Length: 307
Ligand code: NDP
Image 1 (cartoon, protein in one colour):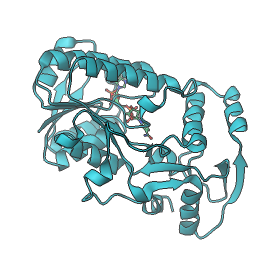
Image 2 (cartoon, rainbow, N blue to C red; image 1 turned 90 degrees about the vertical axis):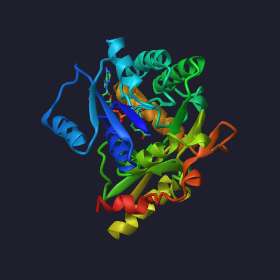
Image 3 (cartoon, rainbow, N blue to C red; image 1 turned 90 degrees about the horizontal axis):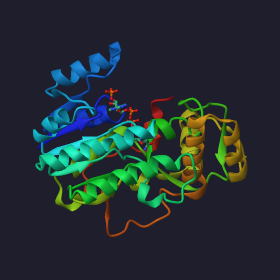
Image 4 (tube, rainbow, N blue to C red; image 1 turned 60 degrees about the vertical axis):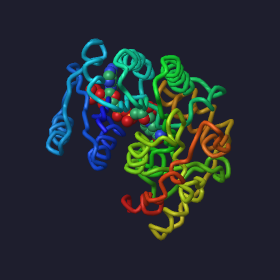
């Protein structure tokens, strides 16, 4: 397939470019004239080229450049940043270009988290991201564009490496605060596996117009189980405290906007159990069942890198 990655310089996007190349697709990476390059980003982009990716220029403020880019490919994967939710609705411009081009066989918009269609009740301000993702979904479906939505649950480095705490992205060797009794099931993924599963879906008829949930069985674990894996690796028991849902939500008051977004998302994951508390219905499939050949990383292996 010919695959265009929009947002290929980003955190999950660069892994998707790598997986696309590894799975033998002709891989295009959209580069924006507005992008600011530091030396790392520049070297990464040059590395893509060296590995065979085709760099193509296009801007969200230039419709013809987006149209030109999408006309060259079969599949478009957008991994646009979700940090600023306004970016997510910029994807409407991409939807317009894909609709006009008419040749794209599959579009994967920037999702890769909780399923936004299940988050209509979510707390503000975190809910804004889900609402924006739903606006993009509606535009895709109204335009009749073939799609796959990837619900990737918790990226390991954001949620496992820190034992699901707020704050630094490294696990403490001393203490941990559990959400409630820490027993609510979450789902953790190695980001490389997110990219591998994502690329497997792009030409699979079973994933057409569906949401694909990444729920590898062994990675459906509670915060307490995750902490237990870390304790085993370091051979030491952590000092544990616990926070109630009420106190956790109250902590939002002292935080900036970004902190509040994180608290509201963590609340839904670790108190409500929104990742694993539902059966996958008719419009969905589970990735590790579709692709049992992928040897996904278990979280005890994932945590080994932090020892
Ligand atoms: P990043 O923040 O790493 O950024 C991705 C890309 O966004 C970059 O390539 C950047 O391009 C592009 N971008 C930023 N601003 C603009 C703009 N104004 N116009 C066009 N492009 C822009 O993204 P992530 O990988 O963190 O997030 C991707 C998706 O994954 C999001 O939907 C997010 O919600 C989700 N996510 C899920 C997580 C999970 O645990 N499940 C964790 C984190 C994210 P450039 O280099 O040109 O600036």
